[in-house]
Length: 398
Image 1 (spheres, rainbow, N blue to C red):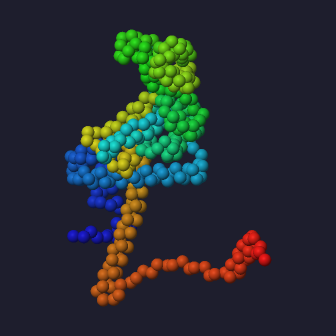
Image 2: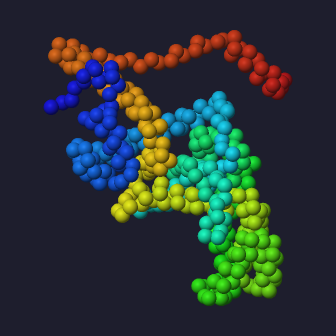
Image 3: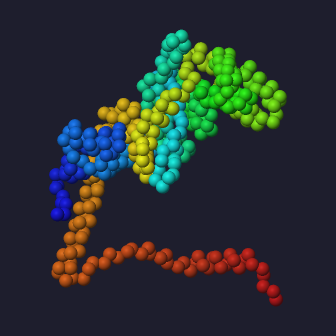
């Protein structure tokens, strides 16, 4: 039996499908947390609603694409009107990083994630000063670095990074991350993630004493303690001496150049005294919680066009903003469904119109394409053009 149209559906802007609006929302929310098959099973167990996993996947990807479109439109609007950002918190942290997700046909793609949070005052835990960052929110996209810088404006603007009291950017050494800071908050205090700096120093120690030896661990522990509590000056001076002593070890010279370039980002005693975090754990955990927990399960391979829609759903779920953002998604879906129904109704009316012509044995209507009118020739223009060409030519020979 063919599907028909009920006029009240369009009048009320109902969502497409057989689920109630609340059932539609619950299905998308479950599919954002767990694989589609498991979500359909939980839907049946808890609510008694039987839904095929393909329906859950279709609804979720459609909802994510709608929210992605809303955010992209918001970026266009912000760039056009240059709207003033709201006031941010007194002390805020931003961290960005990338994670790989599996696509179809054995391809892997990088997903970039930005995490924004509010920095709390330092606390003493187990005899050490610890700084926590709370009120985390996430923005993720599978795009290149330049596009990510632009699209992330929707989240940096919403959190008021532009008008925050102080901002710290704790990142690893990737160039695109430093470019992100230049784009959104060049005034931010830049800190190289301590664990990332430790990796580079660890490679130097391994080149001296061997991989994973007791001597290497002892050397690394001593130098990391020194870096954390006295700063980079003495360590960099010592590594420069090692470079002169062992010129054949390219690991030393390469990692020394990396650390010296970021010397101002290694002032960990000063940063800790100011109460800033020195690690980018919020984005490393963000990669695991937002991206990998849902998109790197066993046997998962994603179509490229479906990555960003799922990421948008994961962002609002993990940012604890579902109740705030779902009404916007639902409104967008209703508008899209109304337009789709209207288009299908027009197509069906046109087909019926053609069938009536056939039943009456009348010639089929032919849609004439408008041909743009050709400009009329201008003799005077041709005369002037020919005269100008004649004047520029050589005089005739007698």
